Image (tube, rainbow, N blue to C red; front, side, top):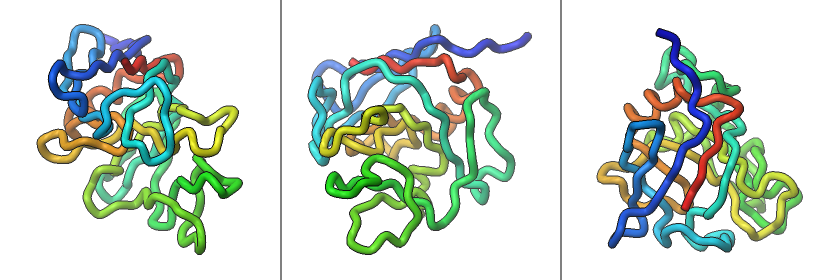
Length: 178
């Protein structure tokens, strides 16, 4: 049986715990971590909130040394390299874009991480066109910490759940947060 891509993923916070939630993918209900400040209508750099809204999935990255082969998906996916970073410096012209590291004098996240959180990352297309400095950067769907500890604003799933979900994602899939 051929699996079709999901048109929409819905993310909602749990009642009583704004930094944990559920991702609804068709009939599946998947636990997830959210930003430490919960879901916010207005997002700012460093506020720890997951942005409320509807986002397209731009594609993503994976660590080839941790996956062996490219994870199956209809989304564009490329290999991460050790020097890959993401600019989170609102004062830099490359804000909220991938950049090579090191980047002296520029604040940036390392995408090649030792903790496994970015072994598989999907870019949620938040604040990407037009990019507004200070409105938040590096909002991804990625691997969760143990116990679904809060993120800095991303949505995070247990690695097996994320890998399984990836098979059902495509260029027309949208994520609705909130």
